[in-house]
Every structure is written in C-alpha cells, then in structure tokens.
Image (tube, rainbow, N blue to C red; front, side):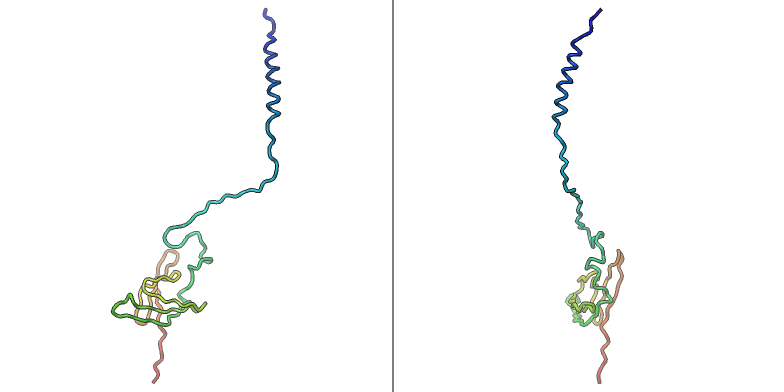
Length: 142
C-alpha cells in the first residue's frame, strides 16, 4: 500500500502562505468624494433654414410680423425693377427697414416691389403664403 503523500499537503500549505500576502497587498480604493462630471453631446445645425431645435419664441426669426410693419415709402424704378426700394417701419419698436426685391426680414422675403405696394412671401412652419403691404391713400388737397 502506498503511504499518504506528504508532498501535496506541503505544497498546499506553501500556496496558502504565498497567496495570503498577495491578497493583503491589493491597493485600497479611493473613497474621497469627487464631483460628478456630466458629458453632453453638442449639435450644430447647418441645414437650410431655421434650426428646428431652437425655440421660435426665443429667436429673433419670428419678428417682425407682417402686422407690425407699416409701408412708408416706395422709390419705384419702372425700367429696372431690381433697383426699386421700399422703406418699412416696425410699429412695435420703431425700427426702420430699407428693402429691395429678394431681401429677407425675419420670416418675410420681399418678392416684388410695385409702384404702390410690396409683396412678401411669408414662411411659416414649412408653408409659404403671399402677403401684400400697400401705401396708405393720401388725401388730395384742392
């Protein structure tokens, strides 16, 4: 019969003796409080038109409304319509706009300048419509 192997018990004892210091030598975790950092992804919208993520109420793109504008003067050039100029006054803040055909004021695009009126294309929520501002009728004095 074979005698019990004293070598296995000795090896197990040696392994236990070496493993204990390895467990004890693990570094302690840092328990000091650190401020939490929050990483955010930032987008820059470069598409055509207005940034769809920006509030219309906070941006200046809403103003002026067509109802806020008063047409005060038209300098009409019958030969070269592109040289015609219209002067508009914003009645809410007294701002003056000098516009030509193709100019954009807020959401209003000057489509056409006629002798007594200005035609705008209004862009709202993906739709376009035409609006016209006319000069006030002047009374003739005798």
